[in-house]
Length: 221
Image (cartoon, rainbow, N blue to C red; front, side, top):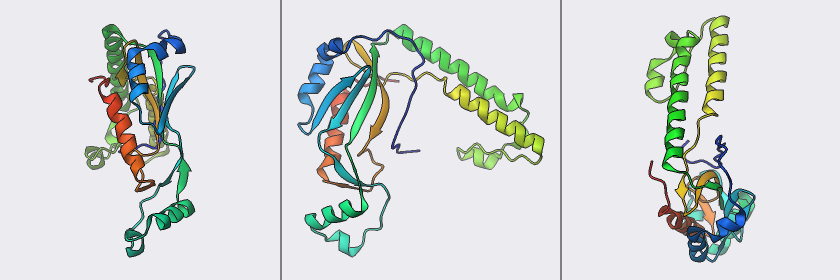
């Protein structure tokens, strides 16, 4: 999916967590908090960091055909329409924070990923379903198997079950490095491109500003 309404990750590494008070004293955290848009707030709960808009917005989760009426509607008319057909929510971004990863931590995670990917790649042969793969669809990015017997259907099901379990074990890389912490994206909700309309429209710009504020700490993959 190009735009995710909700993105969830599980971090398998048991790296030591630092206290919330230590996070709040982190120079990078202090800078983010100081420069954050006045309409937004930053806070922590246990090992989670929240960047959240103080006031809710109205969003339209489905793309609508723009009619002549909506094209020339007033601000008041748009608000009324969004209240009637839209969804009310507070845009936010949630990260899990851990002690800043070292180069060795990144290398170990990369090695773990490669090992799991090898196991996944070997699964079609393990379940003897290689010949069932629909090559045309596979070239388009879709992994489609076409079983013809009950035994083949069973093997395909077992394949996807094991593949799913292995994929859940793939360790995520940190999205950002602060001074003493690494941040892992847990979820992003609100104005991130998945909505066709939002009210007030200025919220889209606010969301971009928040992303730009974090950009300097982005981990290069």
